[in-house]
Length: 468
Image (cartoon, rainbow, N blue to C red; front, side):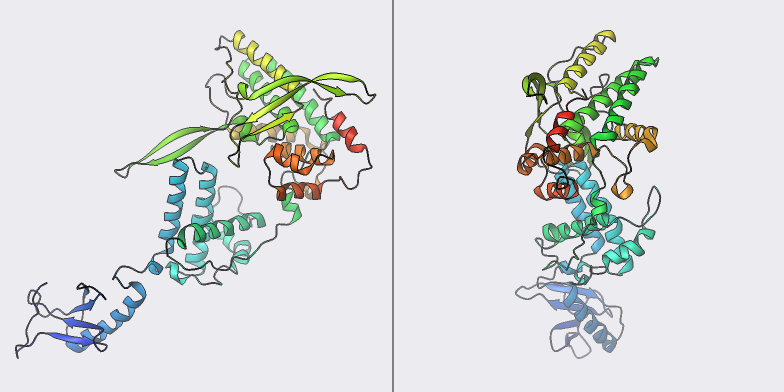
């Protein structure tokens, strides 16, 4: 340790601050410069800061202010107190943890994108700009109580949006707060930045927002869609580019199978996910990972006996789909009346590949992949094609409750609603679809099963098998 400077009387230039809690000193190497010095408890080390004051009295006053500031900023070891870390840095740190989890396959790309969007968007603006907070310790128990009101009335105006700027749905605000709770419970509290979770207001999602993907009734809308897709895919054969005809047949069979199997789009279609990998030298590399997608060896078609309305037995091809990539992470088998669709689509694919000199299909090939690239089509292409179909049908479709448009996810909600209205056990539907019981109960609540006369559900079940 450098030697202390001596005054004219030969005494060390050292003065107590606040009764000995700290000192101001001068060193021989820096004469005339006052230095704040505070012993770290249980050690022989000091916290030191050079002061700006030139006189002893001014240095004592500056040292008192510095001591009080350190009580909030430093812990007993002299390290920066966790509660003083910047909110913005901790939001980014949590997002980085999410990205690292995605790199190892523990999280999906959409989950990381959601956390990034919610936390580094609205939540950060709320804390830093609206509440004018800087450090994590400034967040109090009631900090988020007015978040929903701010988000719906003022916050949306401050967020950069690519499309139309408008107030968010309540479900969006609810997801904001879910990410806040996740940040506290799985990062801030376990790592000691805060001690407890602030009060997170509970938002109740209105029924009209639960109908974001309204089910498509068999009559008349599903029949209209079915007939439209049949004509539309047939017309695709007239284009000079054969890929147009292939795409239209693929889209048609995807829709037919989804409506009758209740699968999530990615479970059939697959997707390419980009993952960040952090190297030892700090560099970041991006690698593409294939997730989901139904392979031909995941499809088993068998003939099964069915009863007609008159009681006669007839054979009908049933399919069992083995879904490998699921939202819950648990594979499941889905038996469904889609055997004819798979038989017809496989025949089309085999003939198309033979005609256009493409490699023959193998059992490990994917059912709905691009035959030229061996990769999935983008979800955007499916979405835009569905949107175009909906626009072409226009006013022929029945207005839905809440005036919501049918979406690709309406195919899944249609299957669930149809199964419930046919009287299927809700726990069986849960097993087939991989949905939570809470979501299925919402489908039950919005269905008309309570209003139907007894026996009608059985007629619906029979009729749904005619569109093949």
